[in-house]
Length: 157
Image (tube, rainbow, N blue to C red; front, top):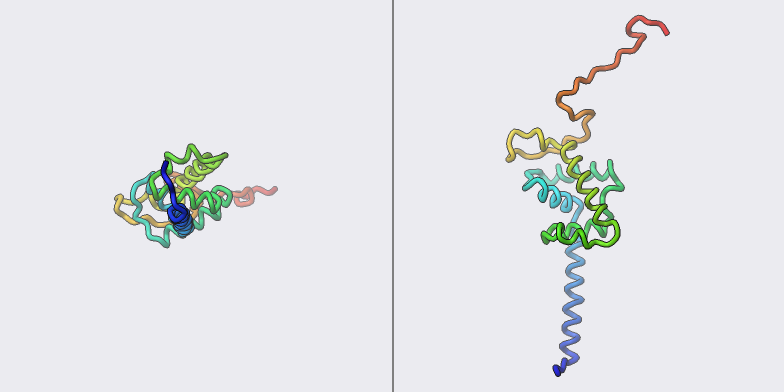
Protein backbone atom coordinates (compact mmCIF):
# COMPACT_ATOMS: atom_id res chain seq x y z
CA UNK A 1 0.00 0.00 0.00
CA UNK A 2 1.22 3.46 -0.85
CA UNK A 3 1.43 5.92 2.01
CA UNK A 4 0.81 9.54 1.12
CA UNK A 5 2.08 12.19 3.47
CA UNK A 6 0.15 15.23 4.51
CA UNK A 7 2.64 17.47 2.66
CA UNK A 8 2.00 15.73 -0.64
CA UNK A 9 -1.78 16.06 -0.22
CA UNK A 10 -1.51 19.73 0.75
CA UNK A 11 0.88 20.35 -2.16
CA UNK A 12 -1.56 18.75 -4.62
CA UNK A 13 -4.48 20.70 -3.19
CA UNK A 14 -2.50 23.95 -3.36
CA UNK A 15 -1.50 23.25 -6.95
CA UNK A 16 -5.09 22.46 -7.87
CA UNK A 17 -6.39 25.65 -6.30
CA UNK A 18 -3.67 27.69 -8.02
CA UNK A 19 -4.51 26.08 -11.37
CA UNK A 20 -8.21 26.81 -10.97
CA UNK A 21 -7.46 30.40 -9.98
CA UNK A 22 -5.16 30.88 -12.97
CA UNK A 23 -7.74 29.37 -15.33
CA UNK A 24 -10.45 31.65 -13.92
CA UNK A 25 -8.29 34.76 -14.35
CA UNK A 26 -7.35 33.79 -17.90
CA UNK A 27 -10.99 33.16 -18.82
CA UNK A 28 -12.06 36.50 -17.36
CA UNK A 29 -9.42 38.30 -19.45
CA UNK A 30 -11.30 37.58 -22.70
CA UNK A 31 -13.23 40.47 -24.20
CA UNK A 32 -16.33 40.08 -26.34
CA UNK A 33 -14.24 41.06 -29.37
CA UNK A 34 -11.94 38.09 -28.71
CA UNK A 35 -14.85 35.66 -28.85
CA UNK A 36 -16.22 37.29 -31.99
CA UNK A 37 -12.83 37.22 -33.73
CA UNK A 38 -12.21 33.56 -32.81
CA UNK A 39 -15.60 32.45 -34.09
CA UNK A 40 -15.30 34.43 -37.32
CA UNK A 41 -11.77 33.13 -37.95
CA UNK A 42 -12.93 29.55 -37.37
CA UNK A 43 -15.58 29.95 -40.07
CA UNK A 44 -13.95 32.43 -42.48
CA UNK A 45 -10.20 32.04 -41.97
CA UNK A 46 -7.79 34.75 -40.82
CA UNK A 47 -9.36 38.21 -40.69
CA UNK A 48 -7.60 41.39 -41.74
CA UNK A 49 -9.74 43.62 -39.56
CA UNK A 50 -8.46 46.36 -37.26
CA UNK A 51 -9.32 46.12 -33.57
CA UNK A 52 -11.36 49.34 -33.60
CA UNK A 53 -13.39 48.07 -36.59
CA UNK A 54 -14.02 44.76 -34.82
CA UNK A 55 -14.99 46.60 -31.63
CA UNK A 56 -17.46 48.75 -33.58
CA UNK A 57 -18.95 45.67 -35.25
CA UNK A 58 -19.26 43.85 -31.91
CA UNK A 59 -20.94 46.83 -30.26
CA UNK A 60 -23.42 47.19 -33.13
CA UNK A 61 -24.13 43.44 -33.11
CA UNK A 62 -24.79 43.50 -29.36
CA UNK A 63 -26.99 46.59 -29.75
CA UNK A 64 -29.09 45.00 -32.50
CA UNK A 65 -29.35 41.57 -30.86
CA UNK A 66 -28.94 41.97 -27.10
CA UNK A 67 -30.52 38.60 -26.26
CA UNK A 68 -28.52 36.69 -28.89
CA UNK A 69 -25.09 37.35 -27.39
CA UNK A 70 -24.20 34.70 -24.78
CA UNK A 71 -24.20 35.52 -21.08
CA UNK A 72 -20.89 36.56 -19.49
CA UNK A 73 -20.10 33.08 -18.13
CA UNK A 74 -21.10 31.27 -21.31
CA UNK A 75 -19.13 33.76 -23.42
CA UNK A 76 -16.05 33.27 -21.25
CA UNK A 77 -16.25 29.48 -21.41
CA UNK A 78 -16.91 29.60 -25.13
CA UNK A 79 -13.92 31.91 -25.70
CA UNK A 80 -11.67 29.58 -23.70
CA UNK A 81 -12.87 26.55 -25.66
CA UNK A 82 -12.33 28.44 -28.94
CA UNK A 83 -8.81 29.42 -27.82
CA UNK A 84 -7.99 25.80 -26.98
CA UNK A 85 -9.54 24.54 -30.23
CA UNK A 86 -12.09 22.42 -28.36
CA UNK A 87 -15.27 24.31 -29.23
CA UNK A 88 -16.66 21.73 -31.65
CA UNK A 89 -15.85 18.79 -29.38
CA UNK A 90 -17.10 20.39 -26.16
CA UNK A 91 -20.32 21.90 -27.47
CA UNK A 92 -22.38 18.65 -27.41
CA UNK A 93 -21.62 18.12 -23.71
CA UNK A 94 -22.72 21.58 -22.59
CA UNK A 95 -25.64 21.37 -20.13
CA UNK A 96 -29.15 22.48 -20.99
CA UNK A 97 -29.83 24.52 -24.09
CA UNK A 98 -26.42 26.26 -24.04
CA UNK A 99 -25.16 24.47 -27.15
CA UNK A 100 -28.25 25.51 -29.09
CA UNK A 101 -27.88 29.10 -27.86
CA UNK A 102 -24.24 29.19 -29.00
CA UNK A 103 -25.22 27.78 -32.41
CA UNK A 104 -27.93 30.43 -32.73
CA UNK A 105 -25.42 33.14 -31.72
CA UNK A 106 -22.86 31.96 -34.31
CA UNK A 107 -25.42 31.94 -37.12
CA UNK A 108 -26.54 35.50 -36.37
CA UNK A 109 -22.93 36.60 -35.94
CA UNK A 110 -21.96 35.32 -39.39
CA UNK A 111 -25.06 36.79 -41.02
CA UNK A 112 -24.60 40.20 -39.44
CA UNK A 113 -20.88 40.17 -40.21
CA UNK A 114 -21.73 39.99 -43.91
CA UNK A 115 -24.36 42.72 -43.57
CA UNK A 116 -22.45 45.16 -41.34
CA UNK A 117 -18.99 44.94 -42.93
CA UNK A 118 -17.53 45.13 -46.41
CA UNK A 119 -16.27 41.52 -46.17
CA UNK A 120 -18.06 40.38 -49.34
CA UNK A 121 -17.21 43.52 -51.32
CA UNK A 122 -13.43 43.47 -50.98
CA UNK A 123 -11.31 43.16 -54.12
CA UNK A 124 -8.93 40.55 -52.65
CA UNK A 125 -8.74 38.47 -49.46
CA UNK A 126 -5.79 40.58 -48.26
CA UNK A 127 -7.78 43.83 -48.25
CA UNK A 128 -8.70 45.07 -44.77
CA UNK A 129 -12.25 44.49 -43.60
CA UNK A 130 -14.11 47.63 -42.55
CA UNK A 131 -17.19 48.06 -40.43
CA UNK A 132 -19.77 49.85 -42.58
CA UNK A 133 -22.67 49.86 -40.14
CA UNK A 134 -26.30 49.14 -40.89
CA UNK A 135 -27.25 49.85 -44.48
CA UNK A 136 -30.80 50.49 -45.66
CA UNK A 137 -30.43 47.78 -48.32
CA UNK A 138 -27.49 45.45 -48.94
CA UNK A 139 -28.79 44.23 -52.32
CA UNK A 140 -26.58 45.77 -55.04
CA UNK A 141 -29.23 45.09 -57.70
CA UNK A 142 -32.12 46.76 -55.85
CA UNK A 143 -33.67 49.85 -57.38
CA UNK A 144 -34.77 52.07 -54.56
CA UNK A 145 -37.05 54.90 -55.59
CA UNK A 146 -39.14 57.28 -53.56
CA UNK A 147 -42.83 56.36 -53.71
CA UNK A 148 -44.96 58.82 -55.64
CA UNK A 149 -47.82 60.18 -53.61
CA UNK A 150 -51.22 60.66 -55.26
CA UNK A 151 -50.97 64.39 -54.51
CA UNK A 152 -47.82 64.57 -56.64
CA UNK A 153 -49.74 63.24 -59.66
CA UNK A 154 -52.40 65.93 -59.54
CA UNK A 155 -55.04 63.71 -57.96
CA UNK A 156 -57.07 65.20 -55.24
CA UNK A 157 -58.18 62.95 -52.45
